[in-house]
Length: 197
Image 1 (cartoon, helix red, strand yellow):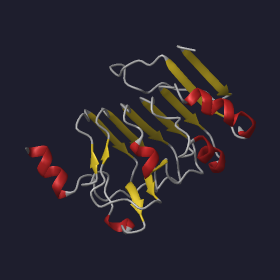
Image 2 (spheres, helix red, strand yellow):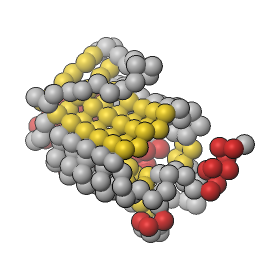
Image 3 (cartoon, rainbow, N blue to C red):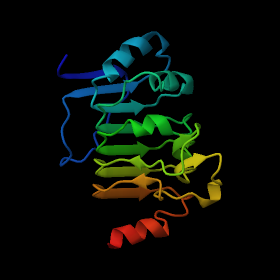
């Protein structure tokens, strides 16, 4: 299929992605629990999906099956919107995040247990940088426990920030943060220096 809009589940969907954002022709919306019997089919769709909406999904293990790092499923994603997924603590591992090279918009709402977007489980080099070269819109809203972009075993949570020296977003146009009361820092000193050049 070259074009599709598929919704699975009975969630009420809202469309918050900005009008000026690039429209996508392959959209997948998941709004139900117990998708275990659908995982293989969903993985097949994800290989070409450009917009992924997750709403009310509570089964973390099923989410991990969709994002399994050995499956090349998410390289085409341009928009990810996550809403009311209260069992999730983070969205991606570092290796999965590195594959999101086409990502233009990331929106996360009302996920009460998300503490960071990326969890660094694997060993990474000090010079390894996440490059979201096409990311234009980042919206984070009502994430009461959110305290930074990522957490690694070597980084204390108290020193995390939204943007740091290991992340690059040169195309970022819109940043919205609301209801993220545990987030202490948005930019570190090196990022601010780069913005002023």
